[in-house]
Amino acid sequence: MSKFYYFGCSNDDTGHYLWTKEDNEKDWDFMKPGAREPLNTSLDTGYAPEEVNQREGLANVHVFSGWTVVSFWDRSKDKRPGSNSAFIAQGVRTFSEVMDLARALFPKTMARFKFQIVPHKHFDHRKEIGNDIKGERPQPDAAAQGGAGPA
Image (tube, rainbow, N blue to C red; front, side, top):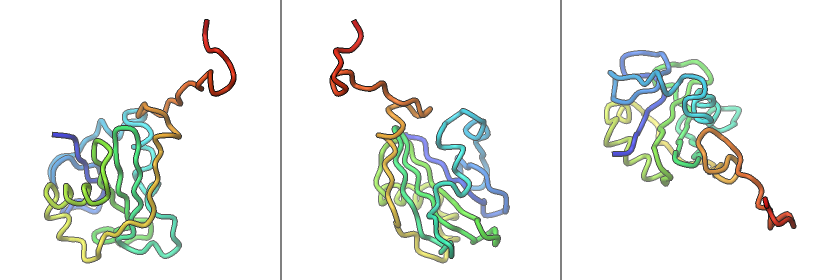
């Protein structure tokens, strides 16, 4: 099965962590610098909608090569402004597919949300970061730039 994570507060804790299983298993390696760039550097508010009111449930969908992130404002456990959650699915998936996985794999977490999670904006970063999850940019196409390429 593809990897699937929840970033946010567990049902028993207000700390924001990356969860591999509901309430009991954190993935510390994923959060280490450089581990899953560019995903780990922006999980805490970086992918949520840029909205002054931070309306709970308003979600951005970010697609990277190999990963899809649905990030939304969430104050169901941590009441402070800027509190957010995200579901991270391995593979390129639709909003609906990610939410179906969230309901299946994190049912208690999903039941805690008293707001509807709705898509706001969709970002496809695959063209910006190339085909590597580390963010390496693809080499320019020599033919497109009028060159013949390496000899």
